[in-house]
Length: 459
Ligand SMILES: [Fe+2]
Image (cartoon, rainbow, N blue to C red; front, top):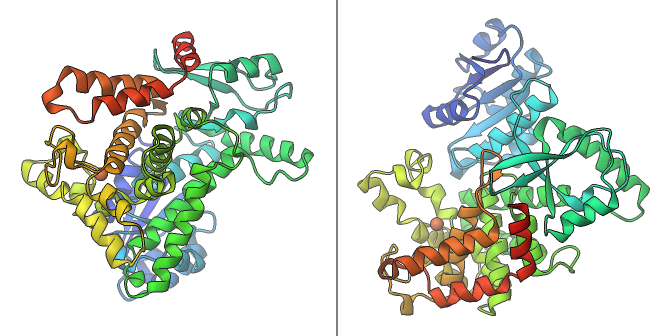
């Protein structure tokens, strides 16, 4: 059944309209030609909650469309959707009156998250999804204004740990920590209450600038800004812009490698990233984190180089035709698969054309991140002894992140299960082994036995 909340679409080309439909399939969509008279006279009633404006705005420049729409629909969120990455400038669009601007289809996930969150704020559901929040943001022995859930991977369920108007005792909170659970979950529609709670708590503490959950969200936002700047061809001719982007990458990477608190061990960080909320760039940020941590734990390569490679490894996906971008890898036809498998080279080309000065190791790790130990990877089918170690670590982090990714609000497996699965697959089929088994075993040994016990306890 369609929701009573509606969306107004105008000026969207085919790709942009498909992205809009994919993100808001449960809402009623009204389409209007991007024409001043049509938009002023043919008003949608009741007013739409969202308006999506695309790149085909005809004679009207986007800023005028934004002003015109705002004059008719004061309370709507007006978003710009663009499939034209060369001309996409988020900063300018937001300055000119759009609430936000999205590069589609690569940012479909982020757009969908923004719509879900807004619907939750409007109490206009469906908002049964969960968001991962850091346990350290939930002060023990303090009455909460929202329900807290823990996710049990073995039976795939979110279980209510504490209800609204209850406090989590210090003892119960410590028990979660002992089980290496550093993230808990809050229903999306209760996130406004969570933000208010953390803001109130922080006011009581001097010198704490923001909650851990918000810090992570800001990091995601910074990565989004960074990568979408890279997609714009404006930076192609400007060497200083390339250097600036590398500087920004390094700032973000510092927080992956060192961490804001600097005291968590590498596997604790892996735990805190498991079950992270989704979003189109969350894969890049997760791979960057895992690759840096694996590099630290295994003593292979430089963690900051692995993090950089993790951030940038898939940027070439943006150069694939939109219909290929919108498909999952296993849905591709053989011809489309051949095109898709060029993406490591597209990523390297994009780095070079943006004049990003990164080390040769970073470039090699990116170009070989889909090569496999057995020699049946792509694009060059390199055998294991010709794949550089950094690329092997990056490839492992990529597969690990995929296994751990949320599916309908829940992580598919725990970190230890993910590594075990990778080991079993390689050991069970050595002639098609994705990775060097000895490297995977070294990785598994880095997980402390207490962590394995904790997983058994939560099972
Ligand atoms: Fe890739």
